[in-house]
Image (cartoon, rainbow, N blue to C red; front, side, top):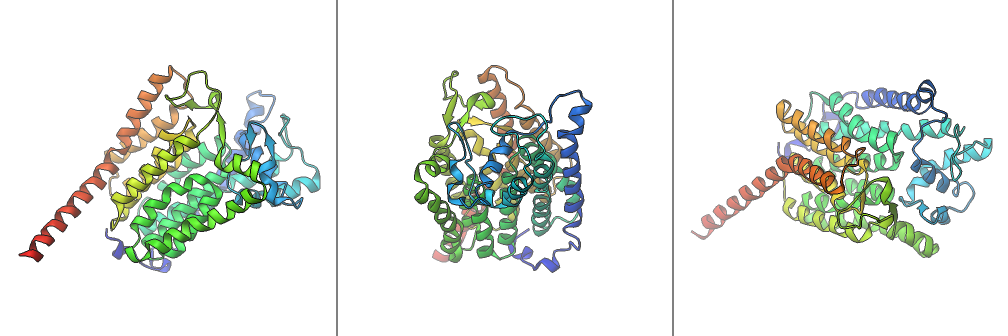
Length: 414
């Protein structure tokens, strides 16, 4: 379906209650997540609640906001355990941090606690990030013409994005960043490109990986708007995060430009020594952005939303190929976007089920640690199979476009 046929106001999208399912499923996510982390652990005989450790690092940085030291948020943590997300994250968590300070609630960082009272407030607050994510997924699906199965797609987003990102790893900011990107592309397909660019900028200030979406977003815009959308997408995050680098140079530079990760907590890349421990992913991440630029070049002037979403999904999913250490939640955004594009294409039978199974197999591969080479071979094969259809579609569209341009040129010169 061409973009021009989809450019309509929200009132004409055919979705009278866009928030209803998001609120219901979001409440389910909150209750289910809290049950799994607290009561279920007691029922299983565990002596501590199951809480993602990464979640506490962001909350520790958030305490700097009510204490009046917001510019110093990147000084929190330890030498190899630092807050490295965007500076909007502590602002969003600041109300919870203030409540914790007021009532002297216990946290599980830096010293672990079996039953931290702060989790009873902090947990539901971060789990509620499911609501904007599910709304954004539905809004994007509606904008690209999906009318049937939107609740099913929201369930897919809940399983493939929310569970691995927030419930398992505790990175609610990744869910918010993906929600903002979905709203940005919703606006792109509704001829609100400049407003959508601001959503892209906000996503980057939540989590830096959202920068990978910029080339695809800009390339899919009308040529007369590309420069303005690029500026709106990139300049605000650069200025905002640059201010922290200027004020607190050593710590902010380390967190934003030189973040590290523990190889033992994920799957290390083949180019790293098997004995690598704490490593930086920065050099390799430049390759991910180079690939994003290449995909953006092939997406230029693309008028089909499904093809654009397929390109976005490829870029987001391929991110893990350039990380020094990878975790399951790195793959979740790309898988969700690819499944949405597949559903919009009308492939709701065997092909869609195949894509779902491939995505699930990719995520489920991460708890296993066979020989490293074997693990990466399996992951590469699964990734190639998952990306085959969207890449083929983009290639076919570019070939058809080039053929059409050649025919037009011959007509004009004849």
